[in-house]
Image (cartoon, rainbow, N blue to C red):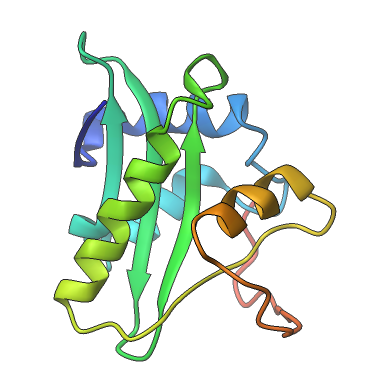
Length: 140
């Protein structure tokens, strides 16, 4: 897998990837999520392509000066279980470490045991926190 920064021309392929990986939810407009990410540290939005250039993976990395965050880690189902997600996480960790980020956090939807197990294999542990959210701008 080749890892590079997201380009605007990747938009449709990324949204389809997220749909294929069941990451899109009715309350999150994926196009608006991409637009918002491109307005804040766009260089931390990465995609993975196969040797033919076909987009097959994505990861949005965030850093607010206190903590790093991961969103939209996705690998197309045809390419899963081949180490691609681990490589994207290694790249995200390296980018954040280079910025002086002391801690990386992520959220996993309750009941997604396979993803919890994946992150546990990478050394992530349950912080015993409760994630709360409040929508400030509705995506329609």
